[in-house]
Image 1 (cartoon, rainbow, N blue to C red):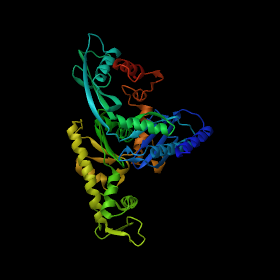
Image 2 (tube, rainbow, N blue to C red; image 1 turned 45 degrees about the horizontal axis):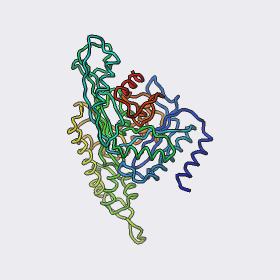
Image 3 (cartoon, one colour; image 1 turned 60 degrees about the vertical axis):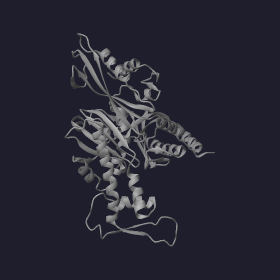
Image 4 (cartoon, rainbow, N blue to C red; image 1 turned 45 degrees about the vertical axis):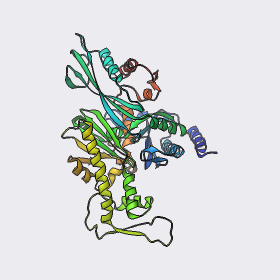
Length: 441
């Protein structure tokens, strides 16, 4: 009997003892850990727009490298184990999960459209025509849209309008953001979740989710750049005027720093990770030339002694990689034409952002204020799960509770249903636009 079959039977036994209660589950599938957050209906606090989680579970990641699944069975087992731990704490039975990832070459592009208006107030039908016109322009061969978000409406060239209904004008404009992922990666993620005996409810871009958990409302309105620094990738989400307007990712993360240390010190990957956690820094520190660190030797030679090196050597390995990653991200942001406001600050999230000196390096690279983000919208998390590494999972729950609303719902994008109404994944843009207006406006 396979390990996955054993896992299925264990889950069935667990489900028999749990209370069936509606719950939302988010799985952050990272290169270093797999996290599951579960939220019940009574965990949503609309008065102050915060959440309370019912259960949290996380395990060391397996079968994932560089943000991509490299072993389906191992990744499915890690997802199942993380969900089981969260289920046990929450006392609920999770049927499906939304998966958060920065892998799959996540990227975005903006679509502009304009429709003519009559001599009457703007109505839902006009918004529907604009949405269908924008969706008709979405052509992404080999890629799968995972987010379709209105950035802003405009009336006769007046931009920044959030709700144009009842206004008068001759032309209604819409700017739509399309966030997409490699289509094969999307289907692999769906299959992996199904192998863990769970229903697949869609993919959420990690930097988008992290921003929802870590950013203040003022930051979203005035402009902010959220950089999610994970183990296998570094991704970015840009907010302006309260809306997401750009997403991008690099397949370089904290795991690459660990590998650099392992190569530079001739030690094992596990030893390099431990050294990075205990002694690593991206900036110079006092007495680092005289302070020596020990690393376990690579291999199993019992006669080999530990590797001894000055701490300055460690900084000399870490700093160039961190600088290179952030500089590459900066240049990609410039090349993309993303509307980054001059006064926009940088918010760092993800496990790799906790490395000493990363914030200082980011300040130097971007020449902007930089702060470390935490899942501030889930204030009651235990200390072990309240750091920057848990922003993405918390953000998925926040999105489920408070939005932002999307032109096409996540379930429709996966071929599911839109609020219990059948939605053909091959439906026309007009049908999709009508469904969005019916459910969200």
